[in-house]
Each structure stands twice: as C-alpha cells, then as structure tokens.
Length: 563
Image 1 (cartoon, rainbow, N blue to C red):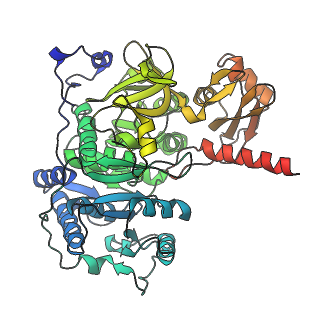
Image 2 (cartoon, one colour):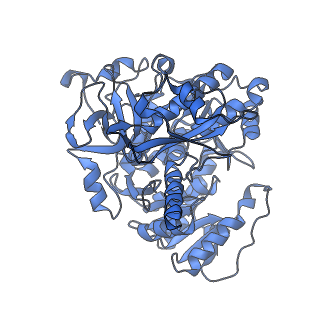
Image 3 (cartoon, rainbow, N blue to C red):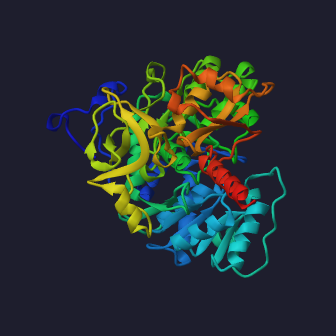
C-alpha cells in the first residue's frame, strides 16, 4: 500500500512509530522466487542457516532450492499445481518450499502434529497429488497411510540423515510403488534458477487455519501477500540491529506455521541474517544456542516464554547477545511478560497477526508494553485497522469501544480456498473481519479482548475469557490458565477456570481464587468453577486450546445426561 502524508490525514498510531519508520511504504509487486533470488545474489557468501551439519550459505541454499525447482518442473509440476509439505523444522522445508514456488506452483502446509482426518482433509481440499516428508518413523507411517487410502498419489521421502547424525533411528526407504527417494528425485537436476514465471497475485501458499471450529480452511496467500508481509515487518524493524544482516535468529517455531514462515524464514532471508534452526523447542538447547551462536532475536509463543522464565538457565546463562525477544501466535499474558522481564532485564515485545494476514498485523513499540499493559501494539507499516460493530460490520466504532477488529493491507488474503461462503462472510466493504474482539485507544494502540467464538454471555453481559485469564495469571501459584464458558442454570453461562500450578504449589479452593480476583474482575466475570490439571490441552502449534476444553465439558454433560 502506497500513500503520501500530504494526501491523507495521519493515522493516530504513526506518532508512536520507531524513529525513521514510516507508515506509507511501498510493499512491492515481486514474487517470492524473485525476492529469494535477489537475497541469494546479495548475500551469497554469508551463512543463511545453521542446522545440524555444516552451515549453509545463501549461495548453497540457492543451489538446493533451484535443484528442487528443476526436479519438480521436470516431473510436470507447475502453475496450478499444489505440493503438500508434511515437514517439521528441517532444511528440506526451505528447499521444497521455495523450490515449489520457483517451479511455478504453490505449497500446502501440513502440520506434523495433525491427526489423519485433518491431514486427509487438507490434502484433498488443496488438490495435492504429491507429498514431501522426511524419514522420521511416525511421519513415514502417516504418509504411507495417506498413500494406502488413495488420499495422495506419491510421497517424496527425504533423508534427514543427510545433515548428520540424528537423535532417533530413522526409517528405511519403503520399497513400494508411490514412494520416491528424494535423493534420486533431485539427482542430476540443474542447480540454476528454472525459467518459470509466476504472477504476484498467483496463490503461492494454502495455509490452513487452526480449525478451532470444524475442519480447517485454507487461506489463499499470494506472492504479493507474502512478500508484502515481509516488507512490512522489515520496514518496522529497519533500525533494529538484532534483525539486521549481522543478526542471528533462533527458530524453534514450526516452519509450517505462518509465524515462523514469514517472521523467521522469509524475513531473515530478505535481510541476509542467519537462522539457527531447531526441529523442536528444548529449553536447555535454547540457552545453549543463545550463548554459542550469539542469538540476537528469539521469536516464540507464550508457552515457550513461560518455560524459559521458569528455567534455572535464566539466572545462570549468558543471554546478553539477545536484544529482541518477541512473543506472538497467541496473546501474551501480562504477568508472563513481567516475569520474563524481571529475570532477563529484557522486555517481551508482543504483537498480533493471523494466518490470513501472513502473520502481519501489529507490533508493540519499545517501551509501550509497560506503559500500556496488555496492548498488542500499533498496525505495521502499510496496514490499516479499525474496530467495527460485530453486528453491523460496516460501522466503525470510536476509540475505547469493544467490537470486532477489521484489517486491510497488501498482506491480507483475498479469501479461502474452495470456501466462497467463508470468504464472503469475512470480507466486508474492503476490510477483513478477523473474528477477534478488541478495542483501540485514542493513540491508535490496539487491545485484544477475545475471539468472537470464545465469548461468554453471562446474565446478559459479554464476558471475555482472556480478561479473566490475565487476572488469574497474577496469582502467585498459577503456571497456566484457560477459561471457557459452561452452562449455568441461573446465568445462562458462567466462566470455568482450568489451572496448572507452579512446582511445589498447593491447590486452592474456588472461594480462595474468587477472593484473589475480587479487586481484579467484575462480579459477572468471576469464575464459578475451578479445575486443576497436570497439563492443559494445546493446538498442534502449541497454543492453549479452549476448544478442546469445551469439547471435553460437552462430552461430560452428554455422558451425565445418558445415565
């Protein structure tokens, strides 16, 4: 989105941008392969990714990507085709992600944590004929199941041992029809960019939403959307040395999730930084990496920051190189941010984005987190946001009023794959309706209140689970908390809190919790039930899952009714 300050009144949030950052930036018309090729040429000899084996330079990364692109093209893959990537964090991901796009096709991400039913839906819905995975036994087993059921036609099986010794035994290549060894598939393919073209508005990625209601929907993310999101991020962080060419980013978030794909892989590649890639999060390994690789930027989700703040390494390890700690993917509880900052001396900078916006949305300016607790920040360059009446979404609400957050800008999806109904319902008057309830203050800072689908209506009042969770997190014995609405014969619905305790803490009564919350919540917001758990359910990408708790409670009620 391009604009000029003289042609429009400034947005209120622009006054709070970091020095030198402008809202009215050009977010480009390039394709993803064009942007990637430019980075490879610009940073050829620099280290792009540190994984298990030798470091991979940008030039070497480019050769592997072009090789994958040429092999796919020679196999008949191209414009209009979809390649399913069923991969955890591994170098095979960028090889085939960028490779598929350079061959002219698109990618559908599959989560390595998805159950069969969801995987089958994503593969079928996306029209993928070929699936790429690695030889971890559990992934091979699921891939062969999809093959046996006719959901997929072929599996390209990549050897994770190619990058050095692995911590668990790897599965052998099954000798059966439909399974192709990636080494043989790639062998002999040229390592130069293929002569394939794409349009910036072509769909580059089908990124499926978390599926908190029903089966996941595939957000259609174009080349323009993805590159625009990266340019918006980089316009915001242009003055931050932690994310500059000499910076090092630790990636433990899954690359099949939009947060890691856009904020880590694509953004870091664009700026010539180095990615330290790990297959999964382990706090000991994370502290080792921060010390050894002099990590400057660590983006994570709240559950990771809870684990980091509770780890003894926070007191004993040298994390002085870390100058930017980011939290996204889910709202950051205020108390969690305070705990981390008190121990690390470094603020956790939050933000907000969605699959449908390529992860781009808002970011919190440095210093604003403590001054405005709970804020998700201000819109990134080129992004516009407002709060609308969720019953009348063409009507914008004034600052301070709670409604549905709407957003528009280059990174925002045009809609959902094969779902014209969902596309029409979510796109109104040129704005995308996010489903997030929130408010904007007079200065243009936004605050999430909750998901529209999580809203509790108690005695006619709107009650927002996140507001209750924020208050419960202030209890000194609480480690994690999720709140849902449950049927209440008197109120219609009331809040039930599910809590895990910190090590050594003793359970407390509902009455004790209510007494603690008395000055923090209104009477209509007060939890009317409390349950302690050893662990709380999570979505495949690690977010606490209210949906699973609601499903469990519904199953209990059905079982009780059947007795």
